Length: 224
Image (cartoon, rainbow, N blue to C red):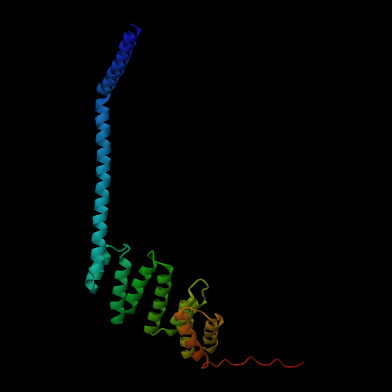
């Protein structure tokens, strides 16, 4: 008899729990449905944003990547001026401007490249190329000073510094500024033996150029 009562009590307790759950669902079904819809909507919106972003990225990369002539490159860069792929497009445009001797326009594009998020090695090379463009423009003094600045920077890689110092020494020598030419060429030799192929090449060139630099000797101090 006791076992029967216990079973009945257990069944009643289970029934009561089920009834309470059913009432809970009945009273809150609108909230539960609304919450479920909100979650589904949020997931759908997120998926849509990711899809649109991916499609936009693919389109930008495609437009910037296939552009070749000046008109196509200019149009692509106008549409996506700050996209990561814009740097390579600008470099192709710079090549066109340089080949056509439109050095000011090439320099303007290099300035925009330097404002982009690019590796430090690419930044150093861009600054070096800008100095070469100044030389091509017929401004050897400005170019020499810029090469000198790059060559004197301690945080720049040895091959870039060697090339910059050699270019500065070469220009200073052509400008009859032997003292600054000697200074820049000595920077290269003071680096000692380096294992970077580019640096080794410029060191060899610097040794040859240094033999042509005539630095006036300091006046002798008169004996008292």
